[in-house]
Image (cartoon, rainbow, N blue to C red):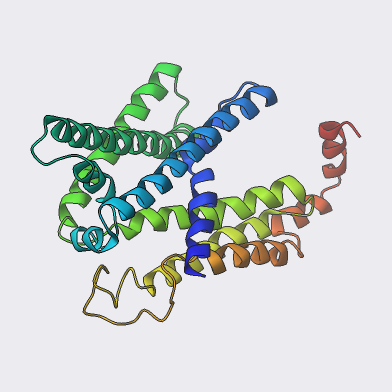
Length: 284
């Protein structure tokens, strides 16, 4: 069950990450959106297949006990595999380890760049542009650059502050939030006409609350050697990721919340001009 929960979070969370969703929002038409999404899904699938292959190869060549002794989470498996396939005195071994380290650095750099850009777009367009005075295209670019700098400075300061703690679980937590909050909302929006604002709020905020509580009470935070607080013991939730429960609950909350119309929709339904505006918008 723990493996199933991890797979739900990894597959759905990766598909719902902002740097992938932005491909759909930036497309000119439906064909471009499908093509861009297909390329992203293909590259992501190839990456995870390669990751699984490297994991099995490292376990076969190096051994799971050695990998676990170096890193309890197994993140050092690629480097250990590169150092174990060739003789210790060979130059090719040094070159292979260097190449693997560079690839790992480039992968992390690319992911951080994509997520930083996606995080900067939201406050720039939703907060600065909409709530402030209208900006030109050059003004939006300058505002975006300022937000990127602020996010990078804040991220570096936070990284330095928590560098002594094992915070690798935050990566899976971000995937869990994406799988729990974004995926049910998109599915309801695409395939259920009755999905409304109240259902969206219940699904997003309820899923986020449940995801946070289950992660906080999981073995990645307390009760294990690789936890954030290994000496504490409030890990009553047995799985490493909350996706097995948080994703179905978010779907259920969206369904329950949409049974009653929101206050804004009730006010629109009482407005005599609402039906006329909807008819003009939809062509009916």
